Structure formats: structure tokens, C-alpha cells
Length: 217
Image (cartoon, rainbow, N blue to C red):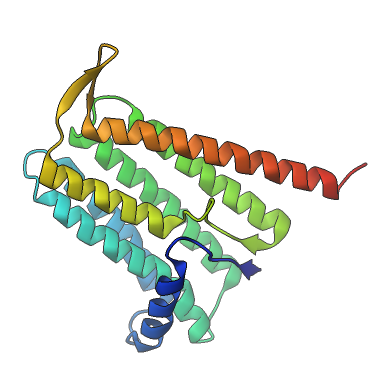
């Protein structure tokens, strides 16, 4: 299938990955990188649960997010570079691990005490819907494009790291909105959920319209 990677920072990201992939040691197999990516996501969840008591764990979360990005970005690339691609196996294993990893991250945030409302539960469900939308589009168009309006997985990781830094340096104060107690993490979660819902809804409508025009009866 055709792979599309046109996001806000895809150009420098592609240059870096193209440079580093040939330099990875032989023991960095595609499966090793995929499993490391999943393990990093699980560590993100674990460190989140400790971050209210010890805010320094938020920095450990960010380190694991970087590891997750790097290993998730290079597992398929190293397979193609070494001529050992297994397209169906790799596609399935990579993306099921991505989905499981996302669930762990959201669970970590929910259990951390950083949030008081289901803001990140809603946000997590919406991101999983984005994943489903992406995989369905891949099937019908034979093009893999994981981004929505220039915002892809890498941008999502960078945004989460920025949120963690802001909470680490500025704290996570609690305020009331319409009688509901919300933390800084809650406010950000609800804003991101609304933006994601709007972007996803528009893209779903455009996809349905395009397919309808292509397959008129």
C-alpha cells in the first residue's frame, strides 16, 4: 500500500529516521522494536500512577514517550531496509500493539490522580476511533495515512510531552467550572477531546462523501 506521512513535523522526522535506520545494530529486529515500543507505553502508564506523589516521574514518562516514538517509528523501516518485510504480519502486530499501548497510557493517566473527570477516557476513546478510521481508510483506499489535518502520532506524543512538562513546572491546580472540580490535566483533556471529535467528524463525513461519489448506484 502507499504510505503517506505529511504532518507538521514529518519533514525533519523523515530525514532523521532515514539517517538513523541504517545505523541500528543487527540485534534491533523489527519484533524487538515493536515489543520495546509496547513496553515503553506500559512504563508510561506505571510512571503516571506515581507522578502525583513524585512529580519527577513525569520526566520519566516523557523519556518513555521518546523511546516509544523511536521504536514505533523504526520497526517497519528496519524491516524494509533489511529486505525482511512481512507486510500483513507487520501491519497487524504494529498497530495492535499501538492500540494496546494507547489503552495503557490512558489507564495510567486515569489512575494517576492527575484527573478528576472522565476527560481522558473520552479522549482515549476518540483516539481509538481515529485509529479505526485510519485502518478502514487504509483498506478502502490502499493508502496508509495516520494523520488528521497535519496532526499525526508524533505530534500527539509531542503534545503529551508538552502537557507533562507544563504540569511538572506549573503544577496541576484544581478549580471549579459550573460546579465541577477540574484539574489542569482535566481542562486540557476536554479541550483535546472536543478538537479531536470535530476533526474526526469532518474527516469521516468527507470520506463517506468521497466513497459515495465513487460508487454511485
